[in-house]
Image 1 (cartoon, protein in one colour):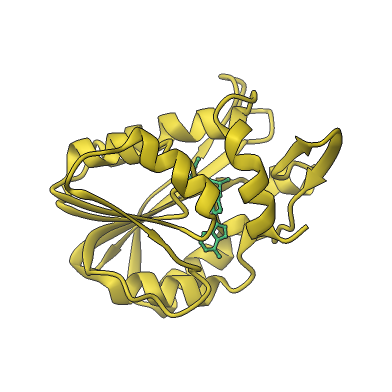
Image 2 (cartoon, rainbow, N blue to C red):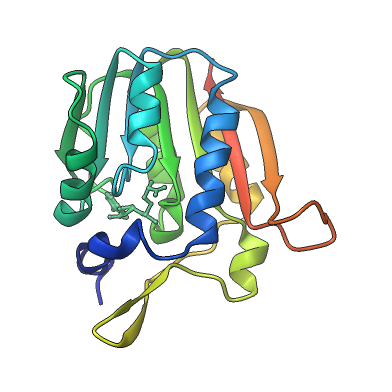
Length: 206
Ligand SMILES: C[S@@+](CC[C@H](N)C(=O)[O-])C[C@H]1O[C@@H](n2cnc3c(N)ncnc32)[C@H](O)[C@@H]1O
């Protein structure tokens, strides 16, 4: 099943099904971004709006983008603030979004093959001094078989994914003059001998 179709089907159950990755990322985004200031936000791959309301509470203007209309519908129902705008778009195509001082991307890049293109577009879209936040399933976790999946009509649907290593993120950032100002690995428990579930990266445009 194509990723866009899969998310259209997944949308109704995305918030309610147990999902450790989704829940941990909700904590990570708040922890990481509460340390910086921003006014204009571009949230790419906003999904059902898990982070949209919190982000909206921290900024003056927010554009939340996704290519799944059904995911966007869920997000719209939760977020009615007048400074929040939703837009249907495929982020693998050239971006035509307003400039922002924060671009966020939570659990999206595992579905995107060409990381360089995303970094190029994000860097273009950022105002000087702006930040690019990324949080993804850790590549080690992916190598152990973790991936986005859900049940649909009694069948397990596994979404297409790509593995991006930490060096891939660093190199894509370097090529676009983005500096890494924070990098963390996030675990399910306090036991750091386990495989980290998530990695988060915060880049700054010079
Ligand atoms: C795992 S969900 C994450 C949603 C939300 N950011 C969160 O953390 O809960 C991934 C989202 O990325 C969106 N997505 C995947 N590929 C995309 C693309 N090429 N363009 C726009 N959105 C995309 C999907 O539709 C889906 O809503």
